[in-house]
Amino acid sequence: MPEEKSYHMTPSEFRRLGHAAIDWVADYYERVESLPVLSRVRPGDIRATLPARPPERGEPFEAVLKDLSELILPGITHWQSPNFFAYFPANASGPAILGDLISSGFGVQGMLWSTSPACTELETHVLDWMAEMLDLPQRFRSTGSGGGAIQDSASSAALCALIAARERATGLASNERGCDGRLTAYTSSQAHSSIEKGAKVAGVGRANLRLIDVDATLAMRPEQLAQQIDEDRRAGHIPFFAAATIGTTSSNGIDPIRAIGRICREQGLWLHVDGAMAGTAALCPEFRHLQDGLELADSYCFNPHKWMFTNFDCDCFYVADRKALIQALSILPEYLRNQATESGAVIDYRDWQIPLGRRFRALKLWLVIRHYGVEGLRYHVRRHVDLAQEFARWVQAAPRFELAVKPPLNLVCFRHRGGDDLNQALMDRLNGSGDLFLTHTRLQDRLTLRMCVGQTQTERRHVERAWRRICEVADDLERG
Ligand SMILES: *Cc1c(COP(=O)(O)O)cnc(C)c1O
Image 1: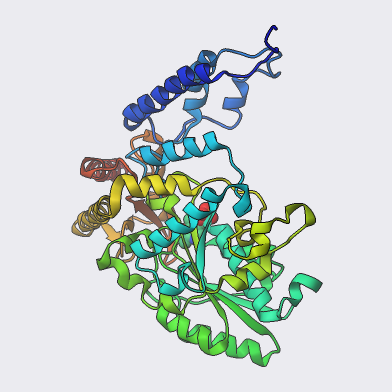
Image 2: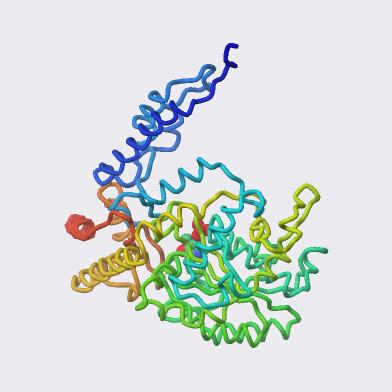
């Protein structure tokens, strides 16, 4: 019998080409440091190099690798460069990449426990590990009334929290009849835009999201929160949700969780705490004071895909009362009915998130934790904080520069005293040089540069060189 015709890659071809692909990625990591960090292409440049029509006949993998190097690489901004100090890190690592690869290899769909028991159970287990590693309150662990699930992003975590809070506040009525227009939510003026987006998507409405004032450290002022809640109640609104941040995106501001938590408890509001980047710092006992009061929160999230060496996407989302979340999000069409679900003995993570389907993301997190161990993760997080703090001391010691705020962790907000135009020119020149990449924000109504140290391969020499380049370009600009 002749074999059936097939266009598929055979396992032996996959083995050979897979090795080539891994070699390609390893080579990339070996030279990423020397590549201009910020891509220099203009809009449309990349598309202009691609064939107008899809190939009628399959092409050899070698041709694809060649195009990756020649056509795609110039359009990459190198997030994995040790000279990347922009936004927040999205750091990756060998074990995480391999975990993702193996997850792709399994190709499972983990919507229900029964659609791949290991996908669910490893996730539950690793999230309990994480809770222990960060010393999160007992109530977030699966052994009590709570538990965690991996979301694609902190934005999805905030949306899930908003929906669970909405249903708790309205006795599941919003799920039936749509959102009650009287519901009001609270966050600080410095909170991430995902809270506002969540309020829009959850049907709360942007006009019903109150932005609470911050103090000089850019942390939410709890007395303002209490006052606003009072005012809203008197006006006939139903305050139901507050989001506090540990480490705001703009400046790493730390909201006072305990004081906010007390107010939320008294007033019956769901408190969601967003620790997207800074949450990772709690691996180290000396930084855990930043999450003081977390036991008063109803939900919490942080992103291993930012600062814990785990490739995007991986957000750990915890709730104290899993029933509230599951009731708000569960659906059970006939075609998903199964014995394990009916028995109540298993977790079906489709009820913990917006989409039905889910990838096996716990694998990469598991590989990261097993590769580094808690000790290794702590070492690198401390190293990043030390480097950022050292950078901040250089800024302070230079009379022409100033710190906008005292950096609590690995993000330094600073500026040249020469004004907004000079700072803008400084940043544009630095980023245009390809030597490093940093971004900006506005603090105290002035353009402020953000230097965030958190890339996997960043060492002291990269931070030193960044400071040297900043000073050199500042010299040039001052000379006019
Ligand atoms: C980065 C960030 C987010 C958004 O993270 P995604 O996972 O990309 O949605 C939310 N909150 C804070 C504080 C962040 O820094």
